[in-house]
Length: 109
Ligand SMILES: [Zn+2]
Image 1: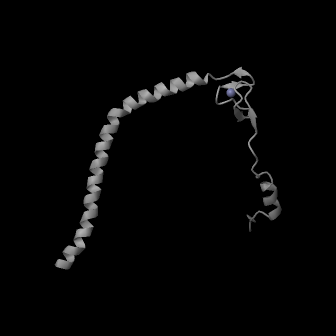
Image 2: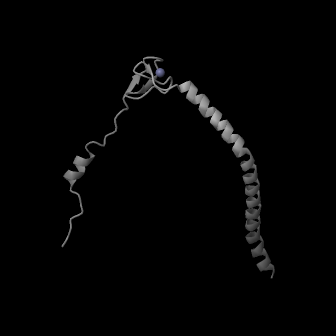
Image 3: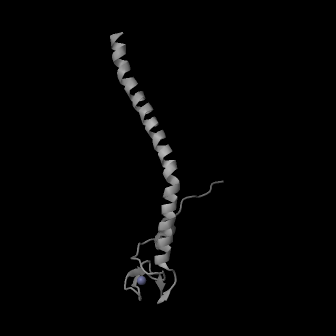
């Protein structure tokens, strides 16, 4: 029993007939005249079809506050991590120096 796995050229062509890239549908915001994707909210002012959908300014403010608080939390953790990284770097450099020295030692011996 043999199963034919190969797809013929016709089927490949039919499958790929819809693959062509098209320009994204862009329209202008009725509120701030910025360009945005059609059927999508305006990312500049948060309006969709002349109606405020998302309060972009409040959201940005909230995001900034969250990032700030996260930075404060990470501040202590980052210092510890930095120390660990420096230690790791030292060990790496020592490892790199050892093979450089060893061939000379072998020649001397
Ligand atoms: Zn807008």
